[in-house]
Image (cartoon, rainbow, N blue to C red; front, top):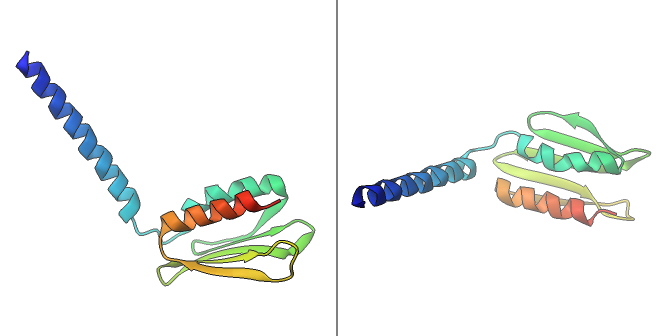
Length: 115
């Protein structure tokens, strides 16, 4: 019976360690492309947005029939650069974020706030 407990504990510890390793791989990977943010932007297509440009370092979207409303996300110098349109304005808002996790959360909140 103690053998079963030891096996159970070993399996549990192994699972925890492998889970931690997977989480660390996600957090510590240096994302030099914008692919992780691309899936976050796809719901905008249903709201009338279209992809104008997609490179490994730049994503540009604009709204159909409102081409001045433009979302640009660029990855350069180890930072994510966001240029986002302000609602009911001809101006845009710029923000620089250096971590992928923060950049993902930022664009999700922005998309949720769009009308």
